[in-house]
Image (tube, rainbow, N blue to C red; front, side, top):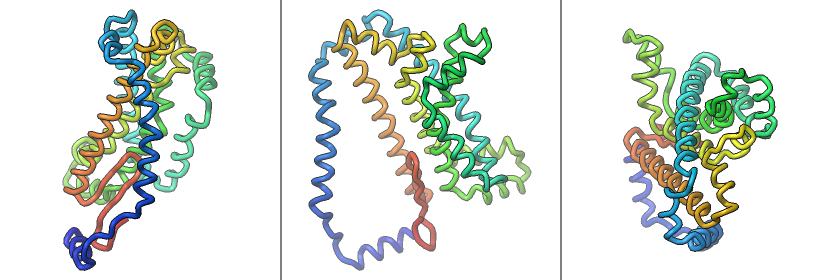
Length: 275
């Protein structure tokens, strides 16, 4: 397929230049998104980044958010991965129903979710911040499921699992040693989206009376605006770097296996064309 693409490209001569209006749109969009970030970075200054670690409560709030992000990611992947694989293999007609169910956390306001959870949650969970991790799993479902679903649609899941079963592998071994290696990019995307959601969630943690990183940023904003802006930009830049790594890994694996998995889209090159 790669040879066909190269031949078709070479037969047409040089590549046609892109229209000027496309570069103009990209330039306007870049200025629109980068100007506020530049203004925020200039407002915060370099000294604010050095003062972050010495700010009271910063380390505890950040560590709590990191712990919640790790727990939320593990639970989300443990629930979503087997469910998505099973639906793709055994119940393909329920895919649309599952997509509709996983979109509900985006439709339902977080205030409604946390109010309902606090009414029915056991007392021993209410006294620990890990109740937030279970609540964050609900919020992470739309992002994690779509990332995993994109990865599953990029591979011939039925053929791979049938070949593994014919060689004597059980369901658990097939999932861990056959399916997982082919979903590296999709799982990495689901992980980053989940972590970014946890590090940016404010409503549930504030109503649950726990000082996570977003709650600390809001509280500290009343006393030190520059430090708060520096912390927000730092979290944003770290997320961008990880997303850039996902793009690089996905591109390399796409060139190697003839397909590419991004956050929500799948492209596969086959003998008959491109999907």
